[in-house]
Image 1: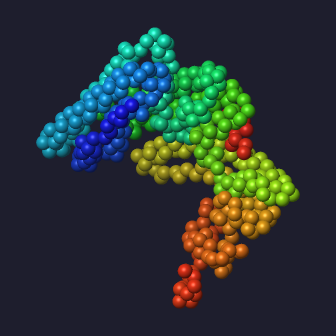
Image 2: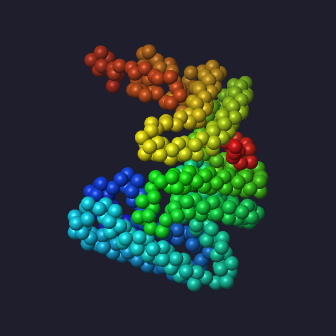
Image 3: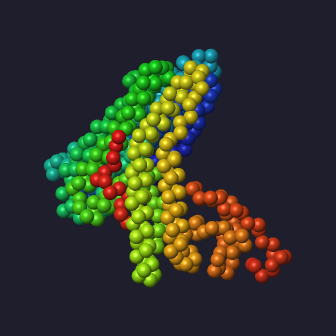
Amino acid sequence: MKAMRSMHHPTRSRLWGLLLALVGFIGTPVPASAQIAGLTEAMKPEFFTRDLIIFIEGLELDETQQIIVEALFEDYELSFEIGIENMNVEIESIQGQIEDLREDPQKVLELVLKPIERWMGERETLGDQLIENVRVILVPEQEARWMEFNRKLYIEQNFSQGLLSGENLNLHHILRDMALDPATTAMIQPGVTDWSIDVMQTMKDRSRLARGPHATIMETINAADSQEDIERKLQLIDARVRVREANDRGIERIAAMLTGEQRDAFIQNSLLRAYPTAYRRTPAQRVLDAAAANTSYSPELQEAIRQLVAEYHVELDRFNAEILQSIQRNEPDREREKVRNRQRKINGQETVKYVSPTKELITGRKEMGVEYIERLRALMSPDQFRELEGARRFAPPSPSGIVPGGNGPSSSSVTTTKSPRGLPPQSKQPKPNPKDNPGTNRQPPGKQPGPSRD
């Protein structure tokens, strides 16, 4: 497949600079400026070159069809750039009218937004035409996959619009990266279909609330920060929670159809992608797992390390589950508080700083990890511990700046100015003076079938 040219165009940046300058020039209030910033989607194509693979794989296109679809994408790209350029020319042509209307910000915005709204309608038409042109070349067997393909395409285009943890998950990506065999893929297809139907509906509800009920951009701007608009924004947060919950249900459904290592890997990869704060590998985990994987130690030491690491993972799983539940419970509250703070500012009230309880749990997990590292250090010789992957960050500072058993200064104890989070600060050692010494040149993160919710 030949490479397609980039969809970036310099006129887009110039156009955006013009819009922002107009907002500042006419003294548009903050809500209107924020609304204009939300129009960035109009400056981006609905389909990108990367989407070609979704068409090819999702519809099982043959070689001839692939050539046709690639040509359709190129036509779409060209039409998109022409549309952007035409909008740019139209907006630049009205700059002379801005001075006459500068006393009426409302009319200036209406003048500027009209060509943008026209382009947004044209952009949507271009996307619809591309889809229909692809559908025309399909054979009956490919038509039978059309509904499933449409869901996959919609999820691909909208999954990244999330704000909350777990909202941006695309289980198609997880399963693609796992490269399951055809028999397993066919076996779990009903679960994948159930998830895709579920999450697509919640995404559509989210998009509807994000757009708002108004027919024009100007109406949306004028309604900003009204009581109805505040209520819509709070409802949008609830809609985001429902997208996240649909993804959580998808993890549970598909995991229930898998067994053994495939099930564990699916849960682990899904939770890590959805909730990295809860399930990202910790520094202590890296060191402890490295020690457990080393088979060169004496049998007695290997058994002691195995028991220690097993105990650590039990506590780690408990912390991770608590952090997950805290994220699911508190992230929506954080976003609601942002909306209410906006309302408080408008009413002349003091804003409220939201402090998430999740931070305390993360700190507790770090402290627990340090405790297990110290227990591991007590089992091993200094040389054995120092050779472990990631152990350097846990090395205690040495008054002389020399690592015990080493031949020179330790970079972690000599140059460190900021200690890793959760660890006591390391003292900064003075830089050696050459005149004084001339010669110194396991288990998946989630055991549960899926994320728990409260």
